Amino acid sequence: MYMSAIVLSSGGKDSILSLHLASESGINLTGIISVIPENAESMLYHSHNVQFVNQIADSLGIKWHMVYAPSSFEEEVLIDKLKTLKEKILIIGGITSNYQKKIFEKIARDSHMSIYSPLWGLSDEDVLSKITEIGLTTVIISVAAYGLDKTWLGKQLTKSNISLLIKKSKICKFNATGEGGEYDTFVLDGPLFKKKLVIDKSTEHWFGDRGNLEINDVISYDKERML
Image (cartoon, rainbow, N blue to C red; front, side, top):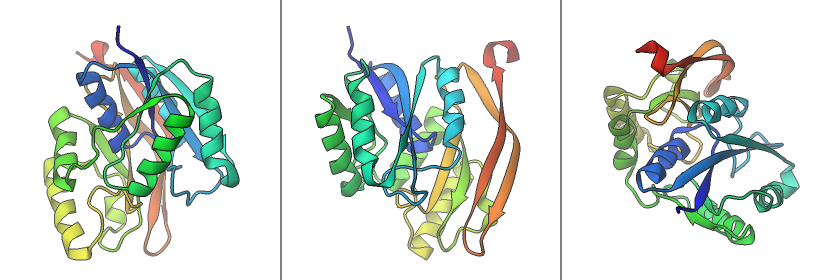
């Protein structure tokens, strides 16, 4: 019997990609946990449209857990919550950030869990190519890097867009995976999704050189009924 696992996710590509890779490796996925930070500029947790991760969890048929994190207790509240859960593995979407990796390894250790980070050490190109290889429907919901203007908001990551993104990252010197906050994403569909999510209403916010797509409503469509 495989140990159960929970994925730490804000609904973005890295964590949902890691979730799919974990499933492919035989790990039993039973939950998603999202942390909503008091500080919108948190170095640990993304906050854009996190409330809609509930619909990702519903589509996957697993439980969603949500934790509010005061700025001075960002690690402690997650540890306290994880200790109350049955899962033994914490899945994260870390790629190259040693800062985040060390903190989440400590969080897992203090929660008496092991950590699984299938994207760790992969190149930007490998991570981004896996999105289309696996078949994730991923849209950009925030941008905060020179070279990424507001036309990227709401744009889906396709092979051609990923190619352009990588090219721009090399010219403008930003992280192509967005791990440093250059951009955030939200996943609307994937092989494990039983329901396809569609953004029904959204509001674009632009602040001169950065902005975000605020999701106002998401509709779920049963994929079996769509066949």
